[in-house]
Image (tube, rainbow, N blue to C red; front, side):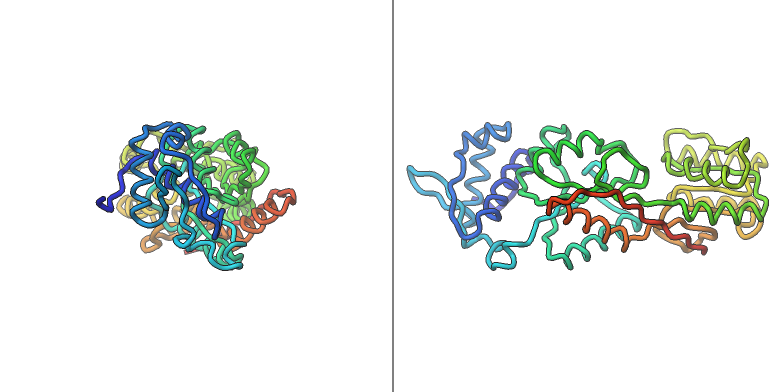
Length: 349
């Protein structure tokens, strides 16, 4: 048989299920469900289930015994070969809705420090990209992995995962910690708090008497930050210009450019990072100085700070990772999770 995987979500789930059986049973060989039973379990055809079994048998991961069944091969289980490794929990890491395939600097900083912190806590790490969309199938997929816990980074760019879904995952026996920018109802969470940074910025902008405030972004986060800064500046009735919240990034940039060309002059611009990396050139082309005439605030880490002048509200990735891992390990030990708020840092470039 050619050693070639099929791009099949049901096959992936079956594979994950078998690997979990290997990991959970250590040096013991255990019988697996038949191809018919696997097809029923994962809502697929016997052909798909049989393909996965045959491929894993060919690789030596499984053993086929004629007229008896298919069994795991403990010698192929390199995960549980020592007493220490047997005690190492398997932690899943998920980004947003579990469908993203690339990450920017902000996410990478969080994930890198999560990986380092989990390694120090003697954990295995499994990066999860779901092969399905509906909630029931996703829960089944998480169960089939044999996970001991999940850290779920929720940037706020999308609604998923919902509080209800996170609760359902915990109800099947997998503890979850969510890292969030915007508070949610799910109790086991680490919040990236911008309160200290907002207070510092409000003091600075009050002294500079900033009045023409604009927001350019895709998320509620930027508008919430702007509203709180304005309130702390004492500008209760101030109008915060949302700069035409149209559907696409290019549309918003085009609208913003048109406003600048027509003579619009903001003296404070609060941006999502993707806009903060783009607007400095637009402001410079309009003759707006970023050191005096207009202040620029980015609400998260930038992929590049090369042309940026202003303030960056940056999550503390190290402290966030430590808080999330500590909470998850506490949950695994049966201790209640308490909401942790980690203050973001304020950088000036």
